[in-house]
Image (cartoon, rainbow, N blue to C red; front, side):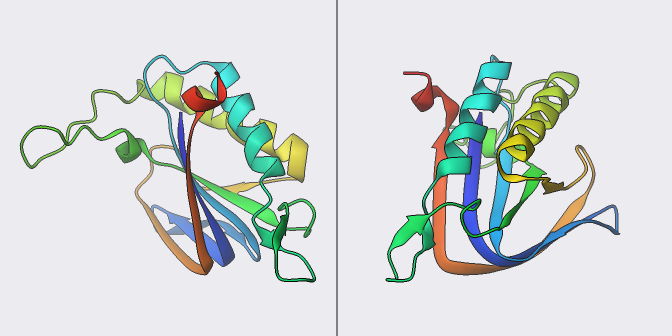
Length: 150
């Protein structure tokens, strides 16, 4: 499971033209579910992200988590994170989990993260989505659950 985490001042997602989720200060998370991912991948990522100290403390050091600052998370499914771009110029997405399986793990991730930091906002799995955000820093971190399994 891949996650791209961005520290944001605010973020909004529209699904099929309708507002789906919106947050102020917090984390904007793109989540890609790969073939072979399991519930453990979702919970490992949620645990790590909830404790990730990337917000500034009173001394300007990145020493606080999203929970510490009372922030929220906006989670958006994104199968294109699993792109294979090794051959040719059009990526393939054969490494992405099938939609039903991917949606179950996406929902599990959102639930696991909500348990740790409070309710998360989200996009709509499989919908055509548009996002707007104001990045903070920018601070962007890419996580792969396979690294956390070791």
